[in-house]
Image (cartoon, rainbow, N blue to C red):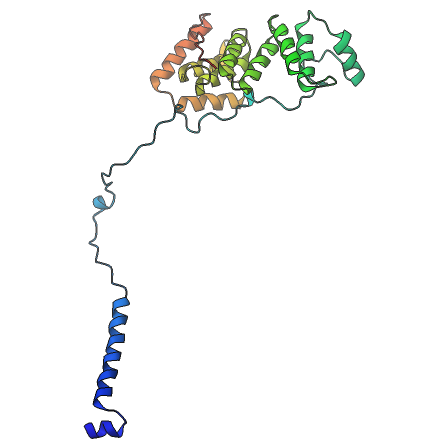
Length: 265
């Protein structure tokens, strides 16, 4: 055998060295190979759906229980532009010259609607130099005459500035004077706890009494109002709904059991 190896050009030391190298390559290849996964025993159906008792941290609950939190409300966002010619308070003026003349000598200082419309002209700079302070003073003068649009406008301005307590007071006054828009706005103050204490029962009450009364029945006049009420009911217990119904019945009988308790701005 030794003679044959020599005829092939191989010596015993060379053969041993080659075998050692080959064996090393095989061993290194096995070492880098992936170890097979352990066999996992099959689980029963009950074990498969069993929830492990693992402690976890619960995040702090939000101040408002309704998911999403308060979002910018259209009632608190002032329009950037309005159609003055078609505005309900417009006394019948159309041209720029008529607007300017009316703002100087045409309006009646004892007419709340005129004061309110002139305030809008100053607020939006419509044919006048824009002046928020002058507009606010005109709104206040009109509101002192119990002109609901002016009272509601002042509340909206306060709401847009996040002066929610002042806003809630204004909406409360307008709501008690018959403004349905103010009642819905006040409801949303209670829903989100803005300016007043969070109270879904009172929020439901003010939203409900803001609906039209037809033939002795209280009905929703628009789908958005109905959707809003259904949204409140989701987060109200049966006891809450009973309390809200009591408030509504008291309101129908002329008794207001929802006095405003306002927080500070």
